Image (tube, rainbow, N blue to C red):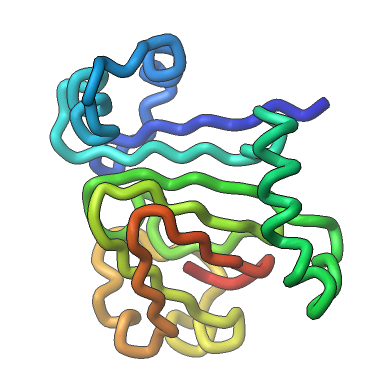
Length: 165
């Protein structure tokens, strides 16, 4: 059985040393995810990424499967299946720049707040950047050419494999 993968970022820095503390810490009564992560990391700018969420909980996977069943009936099951991913962060963009995933994913936005999610096809991204490599740092110039999705906490976005985001 593959293990779910947890990543913690402070700003753009990946902090594997904080993963165990994040997983073992308990939420306080009435504590928001933002307050929890600030308490755990001591930082105001963070992101928490949980990949392969389907490997954490069979009941969760069954519930999401029920939710997605109507999509699969209409569109078919994505080749290679799909992955559930949770991203929680308190800043726009991701710590790992514009990149592509190699799996079909359902992104579950936990918040806090609204997140603008930008996507580019491989062809368009390569035309804009001259490469298929990730773009780190300032990628503001790419945003006007993206397909933009506005996600509120609790929204789920299907992201096909190889789409830059």
